[in-house]
Length: 173
Image 1 (tube, rainbow, N blue to C red):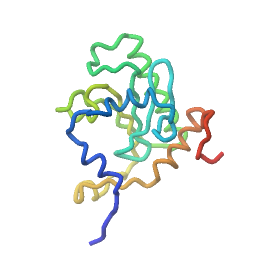
Image 2 (image 1 turned 120 degrees about the horizontal axis):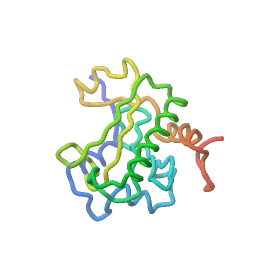
Image 3 (image 1 turned 135 degrees about the vertical axis):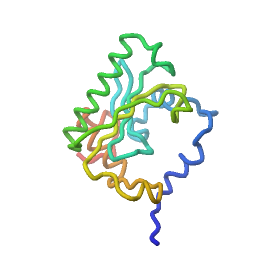
């Protein structure tokens, strides 16, 4: 039997099911932080942000979150709903141009019982899909194989979303 090493997953495994804790809400921390590249934030605008999922289901797995800390989708204003779904549209455009997926899964997990890892701050998952991207690994080994390093994908997508920003970037030009 071969071993597939994914030590970066341990942080996620240890935190699964725990409340947001001392660090607070992930999306609110990202909103306050200026370290977009370190935090895999691809885009910020008046509606919210698009960030790569650090624990992706597939290469290019993005999340769009509103700026306001809110868990109840029904309490978003019309402007917030429109802004959030414009971020989803933009994500689809960028993924289509850079990764050429054949389909997408788009959805929200509202509440911890529904699988929300960040239950207090709603967000939309955008997961690119390709024919044949499922294999025996998730079924037999409960493991997903991601074919490209997160930072490499970040750099490719960041250029499509609008450059590397003003701060010094590790992304090659």
